[in-house]
Length: 603
Ligand SMILES: Nc1ncnc2c1ncn2[C@@H]1O[C@H](COP(=O)(O)OP(=O)(O)OP(=O)(O)O)[C@@H](O)[C@H]1O
Ligand SMILES: [Mg+2]
Image (cartoon, rainbow, N blue to C red; front, side, top):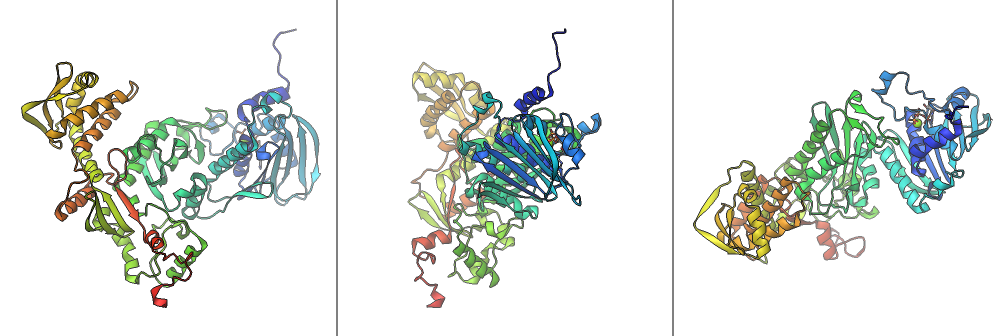
């Protein structure tokens, strides 16, 4: 007898399940993908115990005949692929023909399916891979698959399931990932009778922001901006979360390739790079990115859960994302939105609606449904003022829309803007400008070097002197020429025009610190940027410097010429906005909590 034998089918399926079906959310994913492939327009997901006890997916798609239903449970049985050529032009979510048999092998599984117009539905029950029953049944057109007691017969796997709460959260996130690119399909996710998410279908422009809000959190409401970019045959589009919202990890960068949710470090990196200095160190942006790539340029068959893809032109994808986002972010359009979204309440919504019906102009960028606009108009505002938001005006560069009122604490520029009161941190603003000047000079390798008539000797700690001395060639590229001088000092011979000589001791100590903080793994470019940021900081007007109105105005004008003008080089904000609603609240003009505070026209 040969030593090698073919595995029994159930065992083969259980092995396959090990790769594809890791946990309840994977069941949900496979079932919802099948429903989408079947052309469903409405998908309902029910969970019990976070999916540990049951995941049930019901769709109103094409359904299956009795014969197909039986076949669907066999391994390598699929309606989605016919030939090798098809494999390289896949437009369906599934193609391997292994999801249903895999999950049926490791659960108590029921399939109920009915083709539209058929007299009877088919019901098939499978327990641990063994078909128990196949019979006629009653049921609506479409398919319902119920997966109970996942891994009941594979205790080693069952052990790895997490608490119900964790599994449920994972299921919900998976459902949202599937739903985001499919505005044409409505989704409901429930745990027992509790609705976890209800996503209506509708036009993309209306549906996407609402779904993004479910996915990324309430704080993105009113802080989403549309972007689009292109490189060769790859197109990127989607929603960028305003840099005013920050996260503790990169989890809120959601990527899709041809409507399929994927993970990809390099493409995530494209997003992080585009936000670049807008994010403080260790903070991450949020974005929903849809890539469209010719199907023949994507290999979707590289990961068991199809959570990764291989792109023929990965560079084009990177560029499309990076350029699309940079175009949006560098322009600072996101500043046109208030920094603190006012929580929407039924009441504020009603006020906004009433105002709209009386002809006031609620701002809209054309793609955002009005209910996600956080701004409410002050009932006391004369109509003419509420028109400061007309589209014609929002096209002005942001800092041009501000009226300078004065300086506060010799630190902030106080301005009136279309969104309310605006405070600008004068040091942060100047730093941003300097940073760009220095960076441009460094990039062009012809920094406006300012040779010192008398080279200046700067005292440092021994460690700092060594670091700075070692990095001399790098610092020269930034426009700073120096040499070690003894063991505890350096002699500076030239410095960039944006820097003042008296800033040198503090600057060198800082640069040494920055050099120490950067591990060997960091790229040279990042180190350069960090050094430039430090240099920019030292060359900038400080808090406590009195500025004349003309100087303040010049600074504002310069900010409009500066990319990313709203953040300093260290990622701190340059601008803070206080909306009329926030100010009103301070004065008790909040009509919701102070019903006696009627608008003046009523008195
Ligand atoms: N909800 C559904 N409605 C209609 N047909 C379905 C449904 N679910 C599965 N099918 C049919 O059953 C077949 C097998 O499904 P299964 O998920 O096992 O494989 P697949 O989707 O073809 O590939 P993959 O394993 O990559 O998901 C599908 O090709 C499809 O024809
Ligand atoms: Mg499938």
